[in-house]
Length: 339
Image 1 (tube, rainbow, N blue to C red):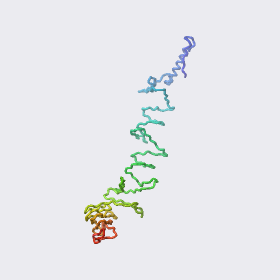
Image 2: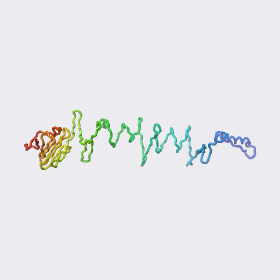
Image 3: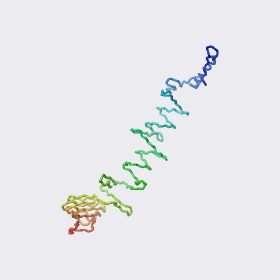
């Protein structure tokens, strides 16, 4: 209803205004309109709501709720959605449904699990500047990867990764996904290969190491295939400078460098086929006595003499790999055997 104004006439008592009855009717109609708006009943204004300088007051049984406002720097409009629901407040604990947040700033967000009885707590670190996290363009469902969670990674390229004790089940592939190194595990293994790089003028190493005191390193071909050495071969040697020295089994070559006649001992070998080379570069002849010697009791290497021998077993012992076996009576020979 539009507001009804009382016609007071043009001048006092000129008889052109509304009668008292008509004026009272307009007053009643106006108040009925107000009562209907404020209380929903033309007979009584609501007791649940009132106006104050602080705003619109809704009166509850125990506490009142005041809908107020903050003075702005310009005129503003607040639009309520065209549907039933509950207004969301800044400090209220509420569940939001079907909301789109544009450029939201989240502080310590929590995500419920499937049964909503536990939460994923998202923590952050202190940044020196803003950082952008870009999610990939997924073509199917996928999941995040976490540091400590056991997961299987598929179709990943790791650039310069630092990998500590990786478990490789079958093989290492090249860029064409072809096997380049195949790994065969051994149950309860305690020995392994150690690969070491080297600085300038150094020699990179491939060595057998492990729990056992003595660990051999095996190289083999497949079927009738052989081990091919692609370049020249050098042997790590020892130099023998003292009399009555025990020959090292850890070195393939032993070089004698004594100016006078001397002796040396040679222990039994450790592997069938193990070889030893003896070179005498000095003037003194060296008599080597193996613990087990197939060809006699000892052999003597003269100056500039070279002797090769191979380990057979604990029965036959060391055996000379020489085209001819000389005795001490062969004065021109560079080595000889003592029976």
